Image 1 (cartoon, rainbow, N blue to C red):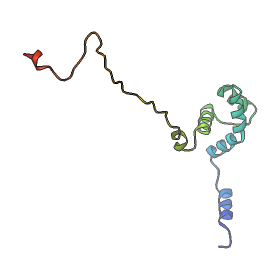
Image 2 (image 1 turned 30 degrees about the vertical axis):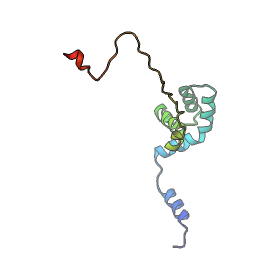
Image 3 (image 1 turned 180 degrees about the horizontal axis):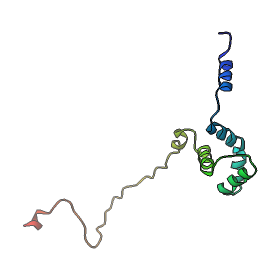
Length: 115
């Protein structure tokens, strides 16, 4: 084993035929920053995709473009979304309870009223 492992992987990748999906992902990653900048400027995803296809910077469908775009905007881990703590609202119990006019429900029946 005179070769390093990274050299073996490089040879294997050269021999292996790349899949269409891999090419599409590489093409999207090449234009990812442009897509994010255009979206930040208010352009619709469909407009961005149409321009990229027309200028032959990408060659895949709109659904694939949307999947890659959504995936690039998601947080990397669930911890990033869970770190935000909700503020606690303290409820101070009132010492006085004033009876309000109208019907009031009492779950414990009054035996005098039942007879």
